[in-house]
Amino acid sequence: MEVRKKTRLVVAFFTTFFTAMLAAPFASGNMLLDRMIVYFEPGNQPRQDIRVTNVSDDNLFLQTEIYKVVNPGAENEERIRITNPDDMKLLATPQKSIVAPRGRRTVRLVNLETPKDTEDVYRITFRPVTGDVEANQNAIQLLIAYQALIFVRPENPVYEVTAKRDGNKVTFTNKGNSNVILRNGEQCSGAEQEGDCVEITSGGRIYAGQSLTLDLPGKGELVRFGMFDGTREQRQEFSL
Image (cartoon, rainbow, N blue to C red):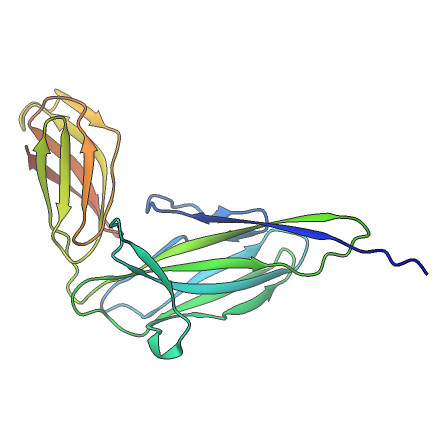
């Protein structure tokens, strides 16, 4: 009797998004997430949901993993997977599930503790797990995992950003206890000269206690940015 061996090659891709400006749902080859960034605000419900849609014609075997981000935004940033139940301050349930073809599954996030001083940052991995491949020939499966960015705000969240110029660069430092995104920037010659401004095309997120250095496109002594805290955007001016 001839025995035919089946060989399976699994190729896994892992993608992480760092920007809060991603507002639309994101789809991989096998799943779609309706949210990539979640904020837990003080005084609000400690529960939030992320809906996962299986966009393939096969069962999606899904696993979630929770990582605590230590020193977010710094050169020595670490992502530590939380597996000990005693250390879990953020839950994602179910941890393992099967999503039917073209079906949906809700993953519930539950915050168990509000930080006292500085916001907590987590990343939750949504990882497809391979199942059996029924084939009489070699097969390739492409698995793409995604990470959602989770912020748990302290009791009195606030960002406090200062700016310091050095030649054609400017460094913004966040002395607050919560992150903020700098976007929609411009450099102007003066507060009254609204028409004499140059767009600043770069920007980014500044975590609490961290800094962000950007190139300046012009010589003006005034910089304006939209400061987005996850809920609303406020315009702020910096004199250089």
